[in-house]
Image: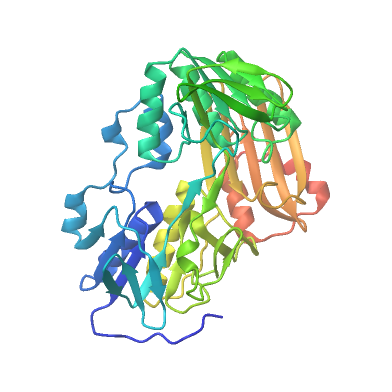
Length: 418
């Protein structure tokens, strides 16, 4: 249970939000909508107002211009009387005084939101650090830098088995580069898809000319004059290219909690089903929130755009004194190259490895469907294939209902279409 007491310092509520991504900015917008008199201070450590991170891949493919990526500008913040502090890092939280410190200034709060997200893990491989032509792919500046490197490259290598690495491989291929996708695992996205689904993804990648390299752990990046000239794997594979980028997951930005009494885990900032931490009046939302989901009845962290927006709406209500529970089933959809799509909802084996699974595959249509069960409750699903989304809404409603389905019914549920 949260500790401490919620003390109103004045008739005007003061809200401080650390992180101006989708969760933080959504919360600020909701606070202003419902509390016209309040004071809102919003911190961001990038030089940019809110931009759409799910639009970065199409921007990298040059399918949309950068202007389409931006969602909010400074004028919007001024209009909504949100005090925006960009390129500003909050250094310390003092819960006893209900204040945060940034630089030489201090900012008192009645409720504080931590929506600090995560940062890309480094490759950890010899030759990568400081090289001019290897990049993570998380921020707008990363997208700009990779795009510029693509323009002066003939071949590119995406490293990692994650969605980030997929998006890189897709962009390299779409922009006409000789594209190699290198991963340590047995298939792409191996934490969320099984071998049968992996075949469909492999087919889609190869149809776009992507060279797939499985079971290849990078040993080193070979450099010359400050730039990488080739990658070498532990099994001796060597690939020459001019552009390299990677996706090795994120480290959550929880350092601000150190010494504050705010509980964290290896997964993020611990919070309850109202997104409140163990310190009363301090909340977490978005990618960094390790929260308890009252629908799925388990704790997890969900790094999707839709989840961040849902968190922002819920947490704003609770920062204002409400008691709203997180009540959404997280969803994610994406194109997989030009030949496939993927739709996920609820939990998968990446978050809960011991889920039971019912699955079916239609190789002619290139469709795959899997449903995930926990103690006879439907808790998630995965669909591959263009047009293979029928029934998704019914599945989501079944998850919310917490209804139990005996195992003999599972195969029939795979055919739900309405």
